[in-house]
Image 1 (tube, rainbow, N blue to C red):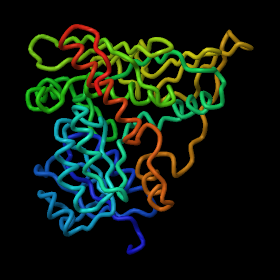
Image 2 (image 1 turned 30 degrees about the vertical axis):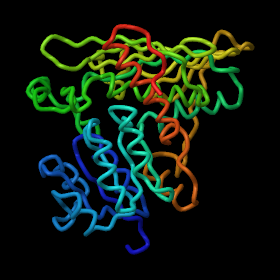
Image 3 (image 1 turned 45 degrees about the horizontal axis):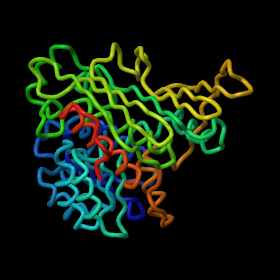
Length: 358
């Protein structure tokens, strides 16, 4: 056990903690040394599924870190608490995997970056970044298959954040309605709403597809249903030097994309100067148009091997080989995604186009 990477999971406000701990649990060289949340009930699913003993269960994050001495901490707080969580833990010298989104504002994202020492790794886990379809799309873009990227079209979401828990186990309509008044997902002060939940996926992977380019300005609209304080639908248009890209988020899709793709399909359509790629979530192939085959054809997705299958594998790989975190889960690419999100949120509130927030 002494040779294993020591991983702790702290703050279970986001349901993805169970998914991330499963990745740690299934890694052959990881030991889950501690989990922590003020509410034990939120941890119970993980306690049962990963057989975590009582002496590794904490309600105070400081005790968890000081007693379990983790190498890597997985964090899943409410979006509005991301900066606070990183600043509270970074001083212990651990590497951090923060569950998406990056933060509830660019200022908070910058606080997170500033809190980390040079030797510490900070990764922002965007689950879509590990989908074979999107990894395949990026490979084809880098190979020049569709030429320069001109447009990225993104539509994504699900039936709503309370319709499922860890491992995508479904809840009921009654549970969803009963949970809304108590869930941080539906509280504006904690970073709730579909825009802040899902837009960062599109703008961060979109920045990755755009080879790190940032837009000039952003225009956004969002719909807040009667009786709620946060949106369940948003549309953002970003203007780049070479064209427009569109990013749409939706809580309330007809079906969940991991079960049955709704219409519109969740994922990306990428338009290049010499072709197009349709890369949808959870799909086993992408559709590619080229100048030689304008009718389009299916391309099987790449087989992704360790250590590039999930954030736990990848962060350990980077630490072991003294490599920086790269791609959409890096603070560099994620920060540009956050700039677009911040600008979109402000644009929707003011009802006008805004220059990209710096």
